[in-house]
Structures are given as C-alpha cells and as structure tokens.
Amino acid sequence: GQNIDQPTEMTATEGAIVQINCTYQTSGFNGLFWYQQHAGEAPTFLSYNVLDGLEEKGRFSSFLSRSKGYSYLLLKELQMKDSASYLCAVRDSNYQLIWGAGTKLIIKP
Amino acid sequence: NAGVTQTPKFRVLKTGQSMTLLCAQDMNHEYMYWYRQDPGMGLRLIHYSVGEGTTAKGEVPNGYNVSRLNKREFSLRLESAAPSQTSVYFCASTTGFSGANVLTFGAGSRLTVL
Image (cartoon, rainbow over all chains, first blue to last red; front, side, top):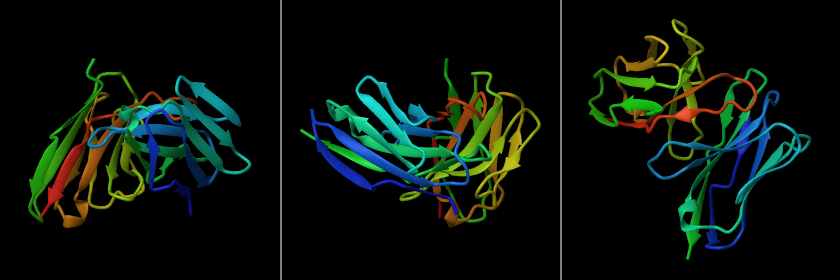
C-alpha cells in the first residue's frame, strides 16, 4: 500500500527553527508538495520538490531525498502565525496525490 | 478573483437525507476534485474530473455522486447520508496533473450527519 508518515504534533518557540519530517512509500514518484492549513481553513501551497536537494523560499525551505523516500520542511524565524498544520503530499505514478495526515505545529511565545 | 467557492459552508443532515455540495472556480482550470478530511487522516479523494463532461472515481467514492456541470462547476451529491459521511469536504482545482501545478482549495464545507 501507499503510505506517508509525518509526526502528529510538534511544539516550537517563537523565533526558533523547526524541521517537520515526511517519509513516504508510494507507487512511483512524480513530485512532493507541502501545504499549510490553518485551523478551519483550506490548505494552501507552500513548496514543491521533484529533484533531490533543497528548495528555499523566504523563511521556508523544503528538502527531498528520493532514494530515502524522505522530505523535510524547515521553518526559520518562527512567528505565531506559523501555528498551523503542515501537510505532505506525494504525486504517485498515476499522477494522483497521496496525502499525509498532517503535522500540527504549535508555536509558543 | 474569488478562486474556488464552495456552498454551503455548514450543514446538518439526518441519516437518509440527501444534499448537494456545489463548487465553482473562476480560474479556467480543467481539473477539479472533491476531497474529504477527517481527524487523524490525510485528505482522501472522493471523485475528480479532468474536463467538462468527465468524472472519475477516487479513493473513497461509495455513497457519493458527482457532476461536472460545465468547466466552472463541479457538484457532489449525497443521495442517502450516513453518519460515516460526517466530515469536512474540500473542493479543489488545478490546471493539470504534472509539474508544479498546485491545487487551489475552496474554504471547505462542514457536514454533520446525525
């Protein structure tokens, strides 16, 4: 079966750095996405990786290792507004998105 | 530019009742999707459409019917609601499957079946 694993919940301090991991086992690979979802709202796109390596976008970076079936999302200079769930999703060989259950990130002052 | 609009935002149904969720996008996207989101689980695909007049089953299609009314609108119908269909439903759209084409989601419809 296809599976994506993420930690259920993480806590971090305002101004710090946090890394959210995602491991996947899917039928093929055609890209990995990270979405942010604030409570009661829709998911919104954060980043896309298809090749190995690091993609940086402001305070957010995403890393991919296809050989290890592993990605992480790195959030720097955490702000209270970063409190949200972070969803990892992999596009499989049929170009369908397989979603992780999400990681709830709690930011403390 | 409204993006993806879903109606209604909230609904309470009794077991056996029927209802339709409506989704409309104004981004000229070909592909549209209906997902459900339940606590502790990833988004699960119910049905999707790759263009006007087409629909296809996703991961959890049972108990749901869809219609791609035109390029803009994609509806989801529950013919006989069951408590197991209590969930938050999201409509999403995109220009295509490949590359960095990302999904744009509606705000969600919270459905409770008693």
